[in-house]
Length: 115
Image 1 (cartoon, helix red, strand yellow):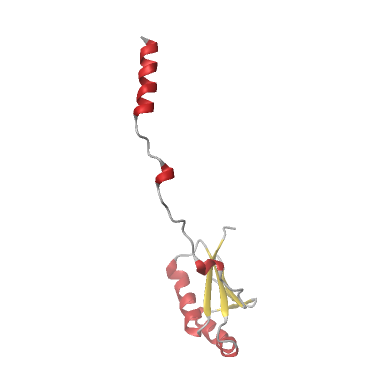
Image 2 (image 1 turned 90 degrees about the vertical axis):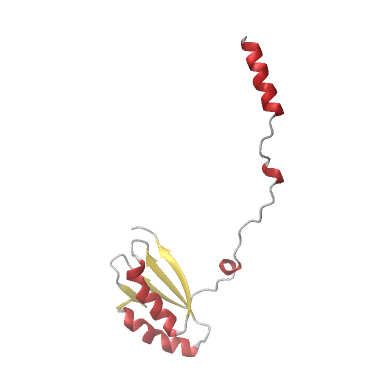
């Protein structure tokens, strides 16, 4: 009886139609933006306390746009690297993003790992 059950299992495995992944045409995700990012010339960091640091000095979110303006005027394609700690919510870092955007600089946004 065991032999018959074993043969039936083999028969149904061979006769069934498993999903063949080789027949599925998939397009791999890609992003040209990530590959062509330029190096940032200025950086702004927001730490886990919500403090904003620009060139090693603690500044307020309302000061960032004014501090970046001279750099943007000198280089219209200025890229600013903005690092934000991952424990912060969007309500906490949104003023910083708006300030960098208002300055006219190109924003390169990254997260900061846990401490």
